[in-house]
Length: 86
Image 1: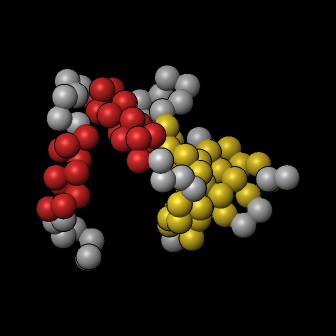
Image 2 (image 1 turned 60 degrees about the vertical axis):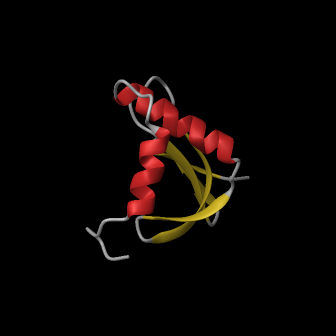
């Protein structure tokens, strides 16, 4: 799929996830719950053009955003922090 092109399946999935959300915070909780229920981690992904392993997706520290914890080679990244895995 080319950037900027509509994806009806994705739009339907998003609508299903946020159907009962009254605001952005509830929509984020809906996405967090959808990821938890899917039980799909770890899974492959791409971040900033690099292949990564996505370990989790969640809301953390009362922030109004989803945070993905990703691992690339020997490093794990989350919320802007970087730490070598051991």
